[in-house]
Amino acid sequence: MVAPSTATNGSSSDRSDHKGEKFVALCTGATGISSIHLVRRLLKDDRFGKVYGVSRRDLYDLPVAHVEHVKLDLLDAQKVKDELKSKDIKDVTHLYQNAFVFSGDDVKDIEINFGMHKNIIEGLEAAGSNLQHVYFNSGGKWYGQAVGPIKTPCHESDPRHMPPNFYYNMQDYCEERRAQGAKWTWSSLRPNPVAGVSRGSYMNITTSVALYAVICKELNLPLRFPGSDFTWNAVNDVTDVDLLSDATVHLSTHKACENQAYNINNGDLFRWKELWPKIAHHFGMETGPNLHIELVSMMGTPDKKQLWDKIVKKYGLISAGWDELATWPFADFVFNQPSDWFQNCNKLKQAGFHGMLVDTDKMYIRLFKEMAEKKMIPDYAAQAKPLGGPVKVEGKGTPAMPGAESASIE
Image 1 (cartoon, rainbow, N blue to C red):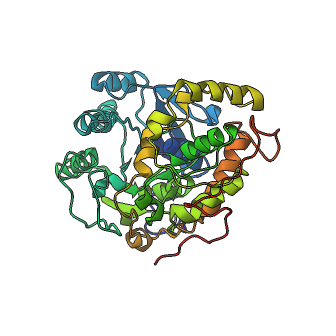
Image 2: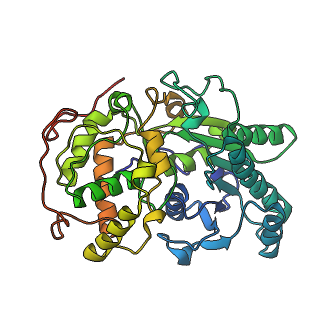
Image 3: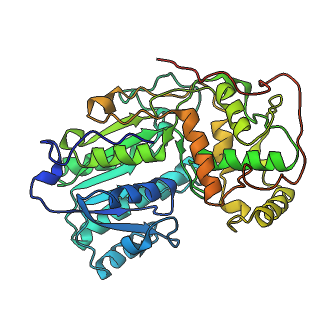
């Protein structure tokens, strides 16, 4: 389990003890991995009296009776203002801006993602909300690993890379608004890949790994690592989405964390070459020699969709379409990194958050089990055998069975 923040409601740095009033949260991207888990976290926090969830689609995986859903297209500035005014949403104290759209074009990404960021902040202001704090997700892309090899570990004080990068626009906007006299403060976290259970959330590697394993198993194939040899051996980190939620609430409710950005990860590091055999073992599979493939192309062919439809029917899974679940472009990105990919998180610890105690190996297995419980993937321990029989492949590349522990690098 994720260790919660050690902060208490009565700490001198906690905003909630100033007047005793309840906070009101508005979470954008409410059908995405970060906001789904954040909303659940906020609903358990007695400092928050109400939670709004903003999305274009219907909410799922949330206790909808306790969340006020606002259907909203954040790309239309005027409609955002009109809708918030018409619904008389004036009570929001905390904005959690987690909406994200990937276009594949860095310039277009600024127009879309910075646009949503700016539109929701100014929409709430126009509606007359008592906005006190703006939190926004950023990520490891801040440090430039999408551009080329980077130095590691990454520190918050590292210089920016050559833009465009919409994370820069989002933070610059908050800093400029503060300089212009905005009463609200801001904070941000910069996780590398986020791990959790969700459908089609772009930066969630868990679903893609699970679906790749299921397809391989049903085709009688070994679980081959599909990425580059460099990434196979590289040092990585990842962030459990529940840990991310705990840290988000900590930053947004403690004055000592205001107007700053922080790195975050599980607290350990790993190499795919050590983790991959354990994933194979969980799915009851052998590993085989690494085979570098482009998942976007290989997993997007019609035969995969047809096979998935058969798997859904055979194992009684939820009827979400093949294209609604995994995000193969992000999986290709993760599995083809040009350098190590991990961060220094001392700044977050020094800010009073001490929850980074998650065992990454155990986290992935726990998440795969949760996916099976939710009927997103087959539960091979409880269900019938896969469509094909077992296969054993000998060769170079990966160990036959797991045994080595994850790398521990300080």
